[in-house]
Image (cartoon, rainbow, N blue to C red; front, side):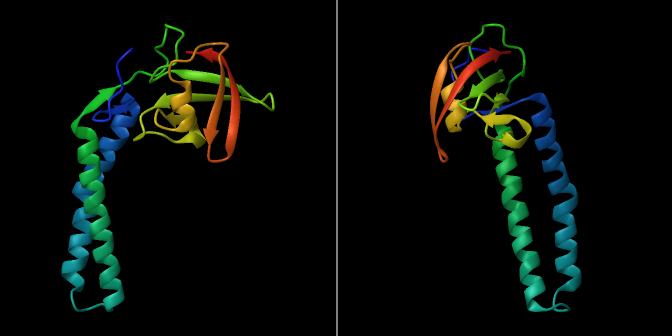
Length: 157
């Protein structure tokens, strides 16, 4: 890939793009209509609290739609596992060993797709930032909310 990372792009895998696009379609075509219908049908017929909750849900949905539209407006597709350079970049899958000699495997993705519990970490996270540009054998000290963490890069794919 060897592309300079910029803040104005949404870095995402094809699978992640598909997921965000599906969420946007669902929110626009189903959720938005469902809430609007509820508000129209129940206006004055439900407790004020229920009506206010529905209005809050509507505001959340509209905000998420705008957020997704912004994310999807300027996308750069990254292909995980396509790294042949041996240097960690967006889309790279990296095998690490920590101080406890436990191995961990992560794929570096953009923040819109990050989910550490499934092995996808953001290029903007402390570990993601530290990994970018590293190669097999490199030792990394990462300042994280949990404190200073040490890793050794075992493999880059």
